[in-house]
Amino acid sequence: MAREFTSVGVVGLGTMGAGIVEVFARNGIDVVAVEISDAALDRGRANLTGSTDRAVARGKLTEADRDALLARVTFAVGLDALHSVDLVIEAVPEHLDLKQRLFAELDRVCKPEAILATNTSSLSVTEISVATARPNQVVGIHFFNPAPVMKLVEVVRTVVTSADVVADVEALCGRLGKVDVTISDRAGFIANALLFGYLNHAVDMFESRYATREDIDAAMNLGCGLPMGPLALMDLIGLDTAYEILDTMYRRGGRDRRHAPVPLLKQMVTAGLLGRKSGRGFYTYERPGSPKVVPDEQTPTTTEPAVSDAAVTKIGIVGSGTMATGIIEVFANAGYEVVSVTRGAEQSAKVFEAVQTSLNKGVVRGRLSEADRDAALGRINWSATLDHLADVDLVVEAVVEELSVKKALFASLDEICKPGVVLATTTSSLPVIEVAMATQRPADVVGLHFFNPAPAMPLVEIVRTIRTSAETIATAQAVSATLGKTGVVCGDRSGFIVNALLFPYLNDAVRMLEASYSTTDDIDHAMKLGCGYPMGPFELLDVVGLDVALAIQRELYLELREPGFAPAPLLEHLVTAGYLGRKTRRGFRDHTRR
Ligand SMILES: NC(=O)c1ccc[n+]([C@@H]2O[C@H](COP(=O)([O-])OP(=O)(O)OC[C@H]3O[C@@H](n4cnc5c(N)ncnc54)[C@H](O)[C@@H]3O)[C@@H](O)[C@H]2O)c1
Image 1 (tube, rainbow, N blue to C red):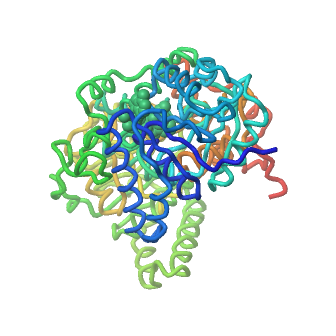
Image 2: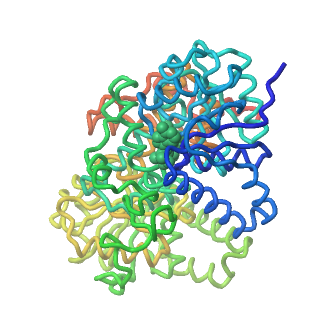
Image 3: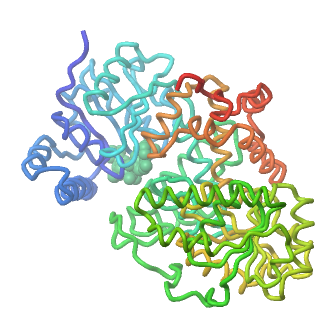
């Protein structure tokens, strides 16, 4: 017969523990909440009341429900209070010896039939379980931060966990309104195994001054639709916890260098910069525990950019593909005069039609008046010769992604364009410095990496080569702002910010599938429900195209020679088989019937 869970114990009321208490108590289960000292208990109680008060303020919980929730919680110092609970879940710091000692103690204190669960993110549940005389009743119940909000729970079964324990815990997750995925005991389980390499890489970008914290976070937030950027997420997780998770994953997960914690992390932890919980991490918060970011010495000044784009009124756009078409629309819509240069009248007619259709959609959806549409179309001049770019103030190149073609084009632009003009390339994978050096004016050359579809995506990566001048960057920033886009500045490395952080994660998901650790559906669920991603990795790969993903991953691997970036063999095989994603109706999933 299935177990009844009428009362549970939670040990450790920090970032995770307090949230876990709230989840149980919200769902009518009595909770014994335990801490190590009176002071820690007070902090834990404050964590819980802070969170429930915010829920009341936001109208998500009535005052009566909050009071009932809090009445279900008994607070205590020491484990003795846990003698009669049906299940204990611990959320103490991520140290194996601490957790083993705690489990040995729980084994002595708790009734024999009680289930003992750990919320560890990366430690071996098996190693924790053998500290008890009941390893078959030990299981991982991995909640996500913030526990009351995130829907996913990873249930970790070891080789000795009883099937009925797993089944009862799964049923309990359902009662808590959570979606569970049950997996075996591997470092990082699903979500953290895919998340932490990415987070560590983002810290590395910040440490090496590749981009600012704001730009790294904005890039992933706006370029991928992630609920928060990686550095803001590190602050939410807690830098000490993140450090321990990375360190454990490095040691348990095959010593993948990408999990070796970036040195800056250790320094920040040592300096007491633990993230939100200490009031300062990558960002500064109003006070410890507060989610509100306040300005500090790294906050960019919000005054007008040093160079305005007043001198930029006429834009040349070269190319006739998807990106060129979108970019023409974006500039014309923002009030710039545009010269579109394609390879011939036929291409120009096609682009004109596509821009018109897209603007018409804007009119139908009420985003644009008919007069504005006509004015935007009227601002575009159509040409098939580069000579018409002699008097433009900025050129955006969006021709085929081939270095020789782009270099030849930039050499021609160098001949034709007036001095001081900014020459921009939209390349997503080629080194911008290569095209810059095809001209006599590399200081004026910059990358302007738009995202597809350009009219809708709010992000532009502004790529600074080692020769790009500060004025050129300032102009690119000012133009991005006029377009209503967020421009993030980064160095000239393969993948810039977004692709360099996104594609290795997608590749890791393919490796996880290849290793039969989990399924496409569970991995997609884990990232959507555990991390709030808009799409799971396999959904996204099928949309992006497996061939595109493979090409980008190869570039990253070639440039950085990072063994962990080597394309997953399964990805290569699917591409070879012609399973490229939605465009061929088959990728990781079969789209023929959808
Ligand atoms: N932070 C996250 O985003 C996250 C997400 C999922 C899982 N986890 C896991 O949850 C666990 C806790 O992490 P956290 O971020 O909440 O840590 P935290 O540092 O915020 O909180 C740990 C709490 O445990 C208490 N504690 C320490 N020793 C204790 C003991 N012997 N008995 C009782 N209480 C004790 C501390 O006083 C503190 O309040 C870790 O295993 C971590 O990997 C963390």
